[in-house]
Image 1 (cartoon, rainbow, N blue to C red):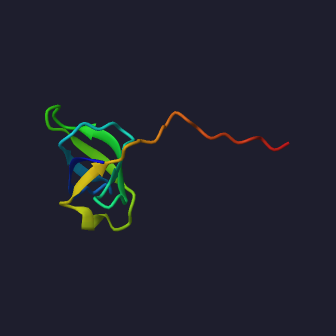
Image 2 (cartoon, helix red, strand yellow):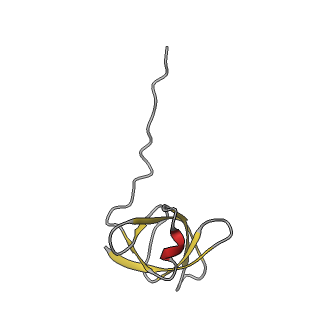
Length: 89
């Protein structure tokens, strides 16, 4: 895992704002130092040189992670694979 930034604050919309130190892609899962999934990046915002990420929390206790470093998982989930259901006859 590589460190990608620090959680800055919890926005009114319920998302967390992360100041990035390394590049990320939308859909990337972010973890704490123990490997616990903390947030999923939804969009990148701000200046190109020092962007921010808006992420959806994946834990109910996100406030305890504010001010802490987050790390990118090795593999981001592949959003192109979609599940399908068979129609019942």
